[in-house]
Image (cartoon, rainbow, N blue to C red; front, side):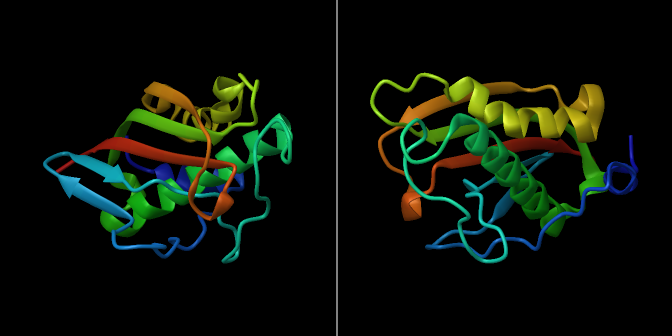
Length: 153
């Protein structure tokens, strides 16, 4: 299906500007019919809206919203490289959650991104996924998401 950009408009979703890399990498790379994004932090308007560990400094509900923002940032990276309408399907999502000791709700947090992709792409947004708890993320971010999408042409 083409028309994902139209779908975003129907949902009232505006993609953010592509987040500038914070180190030596590019936001997204295409090889063959796959686009891999770099890990996307929940940067909004140039800054992180929250920092720290999920389950201590950041609630799971807030972290889920931050994961959605990571997903939007990942889509912006894909859009800047090949255009969102080239997406055939979301193949894989990897989510990292900076977790307080004893926090085991990583899958629920990363649902923020996963649910966004299904909302935008329907069945083509259903994907394989990993949700991983980690001790630290760059810039003390609570969550980070990277995606692999299949594209046409």
